[in-house]
Image (cartoon, rainbow over all chains, first blue to last red; front, top):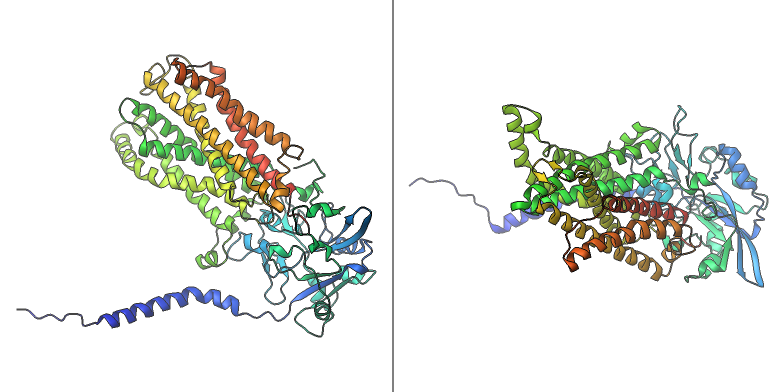
Length: 264
Length: 336
């Protein structure tokens, strides 16, 4: 009779080992996710827009176009003219618009480029930017943005002038200016001082104080994008949450107004 | 302002149509290979399977080419494929997964189409026979892979649109069903159309299939019945699509008004998609089907109608993509 060593391992040991292996695999799988979540954002640039002080002069739109040489037919920042209320109690309100620099940007989610997304949220200050050297010009982010804050810029992205879509472009809070300690162009030019810019994570900044003090509104709160642009005196945007909401205020200058029959 | 009013225009529309057509044709072909008839109908089934397999990859490849053309800088499309696996898991974007998926589809569909090439007729000698035997062995396993892949491809064309919450007309759970049914109906129509061109003349013979065979007429009858059933299914799904949006109390309700009478896309939708693309072929073909089914006449019809019904369905499929793509872009979430 031959003797051979049988594997001496109890069921308990086996279960322990299996448990350890599972835990190990889980840790390895979850590590990148945890690492991403752990990074704390030090600065969160934000803008507070006091719509009570906006006169609708569009100086911000012009300053922005001049700053970035935005092509004809596109804007990074603009002012909506809105009629609120029902006859005879109607008012005209102004609503300055720009990219909301969402904390959970839907445009970043859909960006298909690899291994780095062409549009991404800067970890350091929360600004959503477009890397024009990575952008393929598929325009998926334009469709994903509920605020229509993006457009295709045919003059950007390649030293060779292209015939195609160009690359996606949008407001970046004037990154080149704020990195030098200067206010964004629209804030700098605002006649009524309706636009206030600063770091929301710094409790001494003006934006943090204003957001603390007022009941601010963000656009399309229901989309759960958590914007970094806050509005004072724009409560009417959230007042009506019923299917007829679009009948209670009318946009004069909304970019998505389907007035143009042209489609290509 | 038209520059950013509509960003996805004709290449996108044609791509969605062609990808659906290719996927539908391949799914039909695979289904015929796997569960197709035997006996006296087998040559006829083999022809349908072969046509479907040949039609399959080509439109998808052309459509993908259109997408790349639309970018303006074709080589930038490579940015979609320089991925690492963990990145794709952690930062999934429907288009990134989709681009890998289209690549897989094109490769598999091409291999599947290659198994249908009549090697014996093309290459003389032992080599042709060997390839033929190998192709025949590969056909059924490839079809098993191709059918789910083709259905997934048809669904993906809708996922591409449906994955953006900012476009309420696309962001509905019915869109994938609509595009899948339309993919099947356009794919089948393309197959029927091509073989009607092949058997145009009376007495035409293609391989082992003769136009005068009783099996030919019977198969034609079943194919056309299937097509009419698909049209009815599509009408039902369009009804669901509109009803779903119309009964929702927010942006989708607002967005679907663009399709309803008085909306921007109403003419294209009701004339192009519903009337020409669905009702007209359904009535014409339904008439001849019922003549056979109820009165027992021989299943035969004039050649003009014979060819124009599938063309109308293909046109309707294209119009459906046009209406959905453009309609989705001229509407947005209500309010700001």
